[in-house]
Amino acid sequence: MDWKVFAATFLGVFFAELADKTQLVGIAMSSKSGKPATVWVGSVLAYALVTVISVLLGAVAGKYLRPEVIRYAGAVIFIIIGLLILSGKV
Image (tube, rainbow, N blue to C red; front, side, top):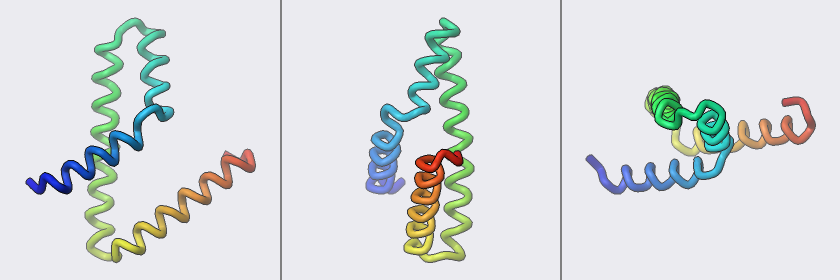
């Protein structure tokens, strides 16, 4: 295992996900249901599935596209989504 890649990925995901809407959903579901362990298991499994999908897509894209293209495409998509949210269309 490449520990440098592991640490960079862990820290990147940890800080990106810290206090985002997913956290708010977990708080709301846990407080409403009163079953924090069940909410935790559901959250972990859902995030694991999303991560598997994104890693597989990244692996496939990495075979056909340079990393710079993927990075710029992601940035453009992020900006477009932000503009759509600001304009009230999303």
